[in-house]
Image (tube, helix red, strand yellow):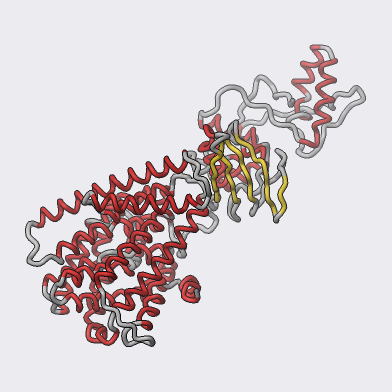
Length: 599
């Protein structure tokens, strides 16, 4: 527990702390536990890596990764090839390793570690386009690297490189197809079958992810790519009891990391690391300063990313337990010099993780790459199916930065078949009215029928990002986003919301028909009804004159004031000048039909 807290507060990947615990327990340590079973370490490491990739995929947001998929795919294939070649050349010519050992080291350390990347990047306020590329790369590049390490660890030279490249492409394609299919089928089943207990949903999600790995491995595809893609599909499918599932997966991920790192610390012999310390520093320097930046800049050249973002991506290629686990493959295969390869990789990972992890936030600040802190936070929505009632219960938590703060329940404009049935505020539950104003920290219980469940969640998320005008002015997550949210908020405070919406829609050509009648303010409702009754009792000519000449008391008067009543019961006539051009409401134009009477 203390190691977890220190890791969370210091910004260091948990790798260093748990490896230190393993070293302290193992040979030359406090308890002097003798452990040298590399094969068992490899099996347990693979199992832990499957869980870590599943947890990372479940936490990957599709809207952030989707624009980054092409860049991440190129970086995890072409970039890996460049990194392997440059690092192997440095290990051969500068350290004096044989080409087979140099190629193994080059392939092993070219894989960025998913656990290290996820744990560090999610605490650094970087733009989503950068974190999307780095997270997707860490999930994708394990597959080709494993294939390369297995190929280099065979007895004898590697022949027919074009055949090896074809095998890599085929295994990646098989793994991707199986992962996407398993994730889609699993999400469909979990959303349409109500399990007897809510605690079964997290177990079912992890079981589907592990099954995707098994299916990919059986089909001679990339099981690591399959489990990551399956988990990513599941994580973006709006599954029931999602917060509980996410917490369960996060706990399993921590458990897998702790067990794997402690076991790797037990496997190493500390006094043997001293002889390979400086070779590891040299190989790591070549990898960090030359190979990684070269692979990033060359492979991402077609995408025209800013130079400072490429610089940050070059430094953010964090290594962790994955390279150490892969270094056990040549040990199990009995390759000459495999123990030295393991020691070099172990020292390299520790030294450069200690350097890169804590300095990443500083470099992001120095390069002036930071995420906008004012960006609206996404809503936390948990869904529970009601199988017999053919409906869903949506539990909505309003975060601090959500633009749903200040929105009335009636202004949510949920689809027909959905309703806000309960609000929990400061530990107190109450049934909201349409005029109830939502606040930060509120928790809502929304009941929705099955056909409009997705539309209801989409509307809630759109209001959370775009405010009460989401959808009217093409704002929010699920709209085109052509109007600035802050400008809309300022405009909304200055005039009636419905007239702003209609005017802006007329400008964009989205509105058909006449301008809608503005809603009456609550303070003048009685006066408006009295005015309507007086007009109905009057002659048609007088009513027409009132309609043309006294509209200001009903629609154009000062906000918050009720119309002044004459003795006859009609509002006092006030001439409203025509407002158009720069002096009126933008886009209002001339209205030959006169002002619309307030109902």
